Length: 414
Image (cartoon, rainbow, N blue to C red; front, side):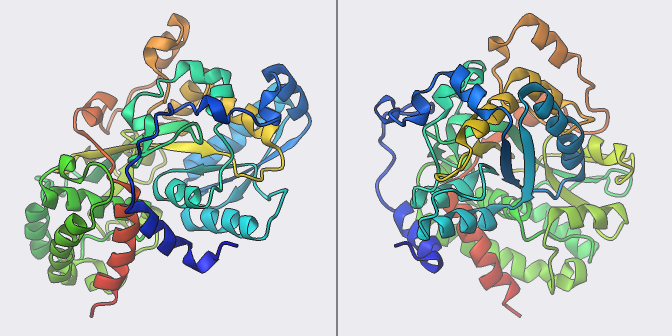
């Protein structure tokens, strides 16, 4: 039986072994396509899903995204497929714990039918075979996706192999008030100078966004993302992270509240930025600034920019737990969510915003025209500007270790 308290430690050990030499494609291995449910035709799957409820565990901290899901997706899916979509909150560790506890208890019919994940969450769940799949080969909408695109094929350097369907792409950006900060800091050295001259105006969050900032600085210390490519390298991590923690510890006295406490989420930092308590925020997606201004949260002088190391690009994914009660329903919902129609709808800056996952060369001229007609960002960066400075995500273990060590080597150091 799996031991819940040991899984993170086990995942750390497992990541240090053998490289990924599997020749399977991102759509999944043919020899694994023998699941009885997956042998049904798509027509049979959609028919069986009709009239059912699909329970989706996902992050619910984004008000704009929540509104889009509640006002557009849920009623749209009900109308199109007669499927009731039920949202339950969960992210990262809570998703891992939920699936793992059911695996440990041999629960045959799980609480959740689909999850929104990426990175270290995918990596950890896969350590105990917690996902159903491969399944993406079965989805008709997969025809519009280039699964060989590195940002899609590899989730934090881990090949998805058909166990995740991409739902969106993201670009890590910094934001500040251009009226207050005339020369936004790009490098770690720039930030150090700024902090000393403007104490109390900076902080970072104890979540995915904050840890991505730390990884960006780790990449800068490493001399570029190419030096952290591939499997987790403990020797490199120890060398570079020692410099990172030294940099933060000698400067945290200049942080918000003198670095004695850190916000739990990027949402809180956005609120601090909106009220002028801090001068910087960090987000994913080139439309983040426009969304903030439209909501009346950010001043219209807010600008977006990319740090010296580049903009970490990644994808987020939809997956099905190993014991999902309604796998047919999950397949139908996921197939719709990754469809060009739904992706264009989601990319609308007035909905969720962001970059769609379809290959523009694979969709019809009509859909291409519809996508290109979407409202363009007025205040933030363009998609092209963000992509021009894109860098790949390091292995999931860098995120896991950075999160763990930030608490041990910064927060707990007085």
